[in-house]
Image 1 (cartoon, rainbow, N blue to C red):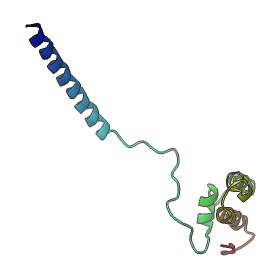
Image 2 (image 1 turned 90 degrees about the horizontal axis):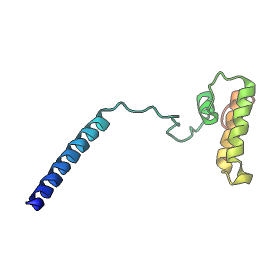
Image 3 (image 1 turned 45 degrees about the vertical axis):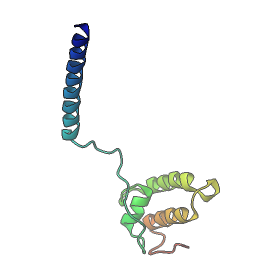
Image 4 (image 1 turned 30 degrees about the vertical axis):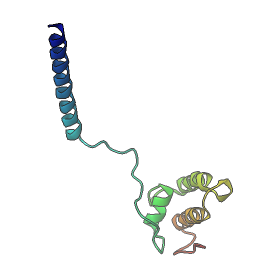
Length: 112
């Protein structure tokens, strides 16, 4: 008699757990997508750098003041400098992006 009672309680507990699991899954599926903290640019570099691409590389807007561009360039170079284990290619692209946004050079003059 006690065994049948314990089995009944176990089946009831499993049913409630299943019901809760199904409701939780449905709530999870219908929730609105969470905004990402930051969306990164999905794609490679263009053959000729544009102001838009330069701004994307440095993480600034095209109309950002010169001091903010220099600050963004410094941050990127600290993170990607070849002497600190970074890529020579990325460092050249970061430098090219800074020069493009500062107006020192037009077009692609990358060594790579």
